[in-house]
Image 1 (tube, one colour):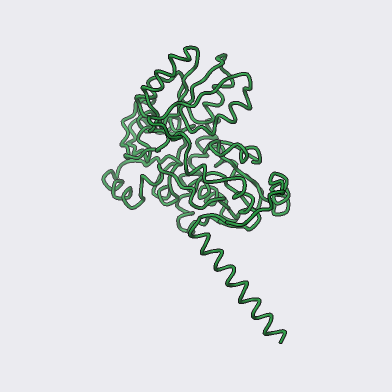
Image 2 (cartoon, one colour):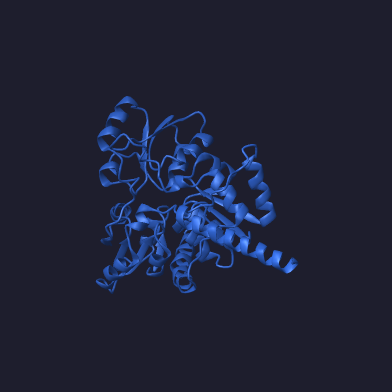
Amino acid sequence: MLKAVTFTALQKNRKRKMDTLEELNRKGFVDEKIDPTLDLFEEIEKLKKEKNAIVLAHYYQEPDIQDIADYIGDSLGLSQEAAKTEAEVIVFAGVHFMAETAKILSPQKKVLLPDFKAGCSLADSCPPHLFRKFKEKYPDHVVITYVNCTAELKALSDIVCTSTNAVQIVESLPKDTKIIFGPDKNLGAWVAKKTGRDLVLWNGACMVHEIFSREKITKLRERHPQAKFIAHPECEEAVLQMADYIGSTTGLLKYAINSDAKEFIVATESGIIHQMEKACPDKTFIPAPPNNSCACNDCPYMKRNTLEKLYLCLKNGYPEVTVPENIIVEARKPIERMLEISANLGL
């Protein structure tokens, strides 16, 4: 009788697990009821200690996630932190390609993503099988890819870069080096302009950074004549031409901190404004307006992650991000080359 009961219990547990995984595949996140009286900040801290876990958060995450994170940064900083952490579990509060990068650099660690469907419009704009054919047209070119791409695309690359180090990565190569740059055409065009290099660009872009309205920004600047206009290089050229400063997310934050200006119009995903306001409580930060009435300067993928999803993912140990071993081996090479060049340049 005991054996029968035990077997039945095992069957129920197995069915419960299968139902959970099916729901996870459908929704992309653990959907469990949470006691509304729980202090999620406190519970997450407890779980981090119990599981030897670290939370890495991108600047574009919601403020609560940024506040609970062990490290907040842009793609380069997060890649570096993922490579050196001694934690057994990495909870990556960002988007899918970022979690993949952490897994590539630390294949022995468990990498969790609060919402598995937190993707990236830029990564989606460059399917690896099409990029492979594109690359075959230029067999004598070095391939540099922006870190905002899939693990498969990184595996097709010679060097990975971020918006922080893209110019320096290109300049580190001999001037006669022929270069393919992908997947972001706007970042690539800005790098080409900064370096004077003739880059072959893949035609990809980020939906958030392409939505800003030059006309509305112009009108906003008229209302705030003392404001500095700062922009991410993923923005279109027409917007970048107006900028007082162009830089990576970290670069924009540092500029705001060090500038004497008291007002800033910010053309990038609005999540960074939380850190700007924390660092500069005496300054005003205004999100650059998109070309319609929606909140399109909020990345819908980044904002899929919530504090509740982060808690449940850490508690249950999934959704987990995995990368095939052969992809890990090939994708690790260009990432390590980027980290090596960045370290040599002091970035």
